[in-house]
Length: 260
Image 1: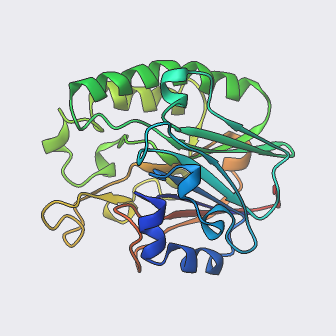
Image 2: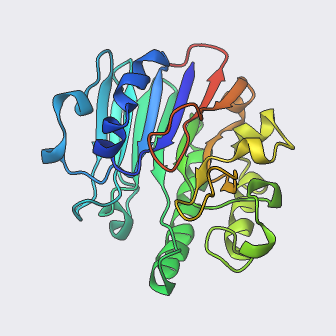
């Protein structure tokens, strides 16, 4: 089973940069996408269902904002948009697709970088989402949460960690929340399981300012976070940087066995 996650920074923009040409070449079973910046009326037939894939989406109510989606070769048994908190469900941040005993979730956490009001919203999300993560762990299903978490967990997850200790995405409270997920709750950071000490090769996002991408001044904020059963089947991970569809790079992880 092959799963890809990618923040598109606009699905129409990514398409114009070759995303839909690249996608079928990957032969992935599932592709989770975030930050659609589109509503249903904006989606072409090819965006809704690329050749060989079923597409499902959770759009934000606000135009040109947020939104997540899942492309799958196999039609899901069930699809659920949102996790029950109106403030964030209205922003199109959560989409779950069930395939047998496996659930795959496309997730887009808020960013707090645009101001104190957005950081406050991000903290509200973390408080609301933690009980949901606990509930998912207790459900007895295998789960893979894919997406842009907008948090770098450890110092090795970003280039300039010393300069970002007081910035959104690397705040102590955010990092402690991630530690709780991987510790107390028992979720697994699948890329870190495969590459426990990788530094600059692990980055998935680069600022558009300056020459961040050229100098590889990046952050690892895109994850596949899974229940232990499916996580232990992960065999390899890759971050694709030969082409650029957005300010994020696709993260691909292959798992032994056929779940979907």
